[in-house]
Image 1 (spheres, helix red, strand yellow):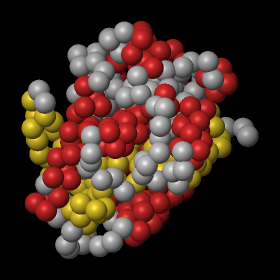
Image 2: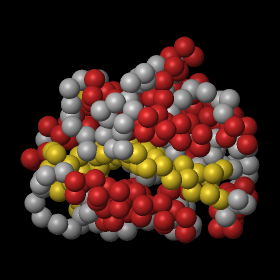
Image 3: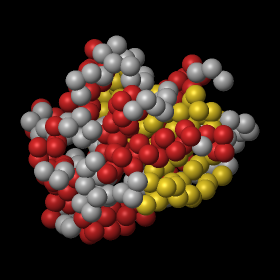
Image 4: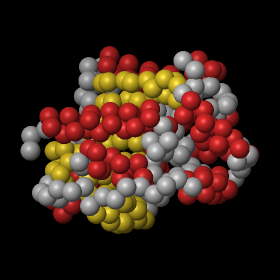
Amino acid sequence: MPLDPQQKALLDQIAALNLPALSSLSAELARQQYTDRMKRMPPGRPVANVEDRRIPGADGDIPLRIYRPIGAGALPALVYYHGGGWVIGNLDTHDAVCREITNAAGCVVVSVDYRLAPEHKFPVAAEDSFAATRWVAENAAELDIDPRRIAVGGDSAGGNLAAVVTQMARERGGPAIAFQLLVYPVTNFDFATPSYAENAEGYGLTADSMRWFWDQYLPEDGQGSHRHASPLQAEDLRRLPPALVITAEYDPLRDEGEAYAAKLRDAGVPVTVTRYDGVCHGFFGQSIFLDKAKLAVAEACAALREAFARQPV
């Protein structure tokens, strides 16, 4: 369908900023450009409590931001990994969406500030994300979190990390994960899909930007086929947690996200896949501007509530 009018207006506003292409920038300048643009966004909604913490990782501390909704007792939790191509983004750039999920899903959200490429190449982001998830499960009592009701989720590269963390947890004997929320996830090191050809430029995320992100992330091209970089390449997706996969029509990553959902379903994993027509990559975090984003966030939070309700309390 044609571009959603609200999405087109937002794309026009971004185009008017005349920003240089990410692929022309250093990682440091790309981060600054993204952070500056996100600072133009209105602040997120209040939640009951927000706490910044640092937890031990394999090579130093991993920063976390923990959001709590109103409610007493052991609450369910979503461990969230921000998007940004494993190169840009941080706790602040995804603060608003974490607050929105906290309130709407009625769960604790633990946002993970994993180390970024190219300073820290694959598999560092995945290992940090897994370590943070395991820490949340092991410290659930202290955090007033129900360890039987822990989900993982993320957008774009964060969706990639969420998918990979579920595979790591299965391979490494835990922790138990109740659900995975994958928002336009990166699932495969492959630029030959129809959605890459159809949406190579003009819709926010470009094919050139994705090549640049992968170049920053991978130590060498051959590792792009590793299942912890490209979860679609995993041979066996059985016994993974139920999933909601959200994709966008005008997104180079659309086809690989939907392919991952299909492969999960073929492996017997309960999965819902919803394509939001008329919108672009990144729309999920733009609910203040886009009605389609409001619908997507509402769907995600309803799916989380349903998944948590299926677990014994």
